[in-house]
Image 1 (tube, one colour):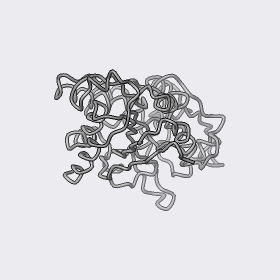
Image 2 (cartoon, helix red, strand yellow; image 1 turned 90 degrees about the vertical axis):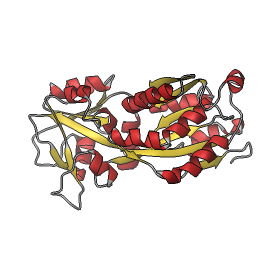
Image 3 (tube, rainbow, N blue to C red; image 1 turned 135 degrees about the horizontal axis):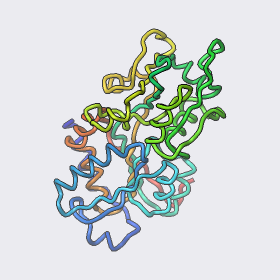
Image 4 (cartoon, one colour; image 1 turned 180 degrees about the horizontal axis):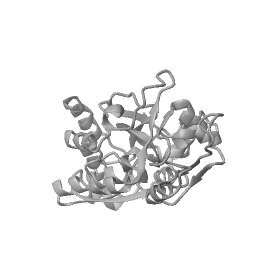
Length: 304
């Protein structure tokens, strides 16, 4: 944990020009108000981070907006927020879209999470990695299966669906058996009441097993255990142990992306998240804290 200190310091001292000049004069790393936009797959994590940060810094207000990954990137590109959290880095096209702002974009990998699959307690809850991919494309784990599954996501334009399509299926579209609902709560309810449904969620929705609300959500459901293709009999659930040792198949990084100019509150909140306290919160909620250094991308007006 302690080797994060130099990068936290670097993060605090790096500067560029913020959009909102009124906040430039009033915000400090420990006071003021700032809007932070977060992929709503990480609502439990960031609700906790905000609560602890504001308890520590009484003059600070973090206004969290939970939305889709696509909307978070859009707001950052328009300059309406200086800090977002998503589960991927910005693409070259997105970087080009903000080149005229001339900002230094800081990309900070701060945690790793997993994609969780849930099903009714009445059906099989173990699949190989390939069988799960088959379900995402065709609805069937294999040719012998009599079941034809519907796969439900919590929302349109979710980062979870983008990750599966772009990183796991390598650009292949999800099958016609895949649908978007309106919330994680709807996913839990739908799967609980349908034996031919599989729900797909960021593990953050179920990782804090000490939370009574999480236990209530999982009543009547199974978390699907998945084996890597090369180890077909080692079925693993996306629990903290298998996320941290990298043995669960469907893992991804989480990123803070900052475009704040001065040492303002967005910078302070990001530094808090990457501090020992923030890493401890991430660990306790069942995700894997990152120990990688800050990655800084310089974007100039002459960027090609």
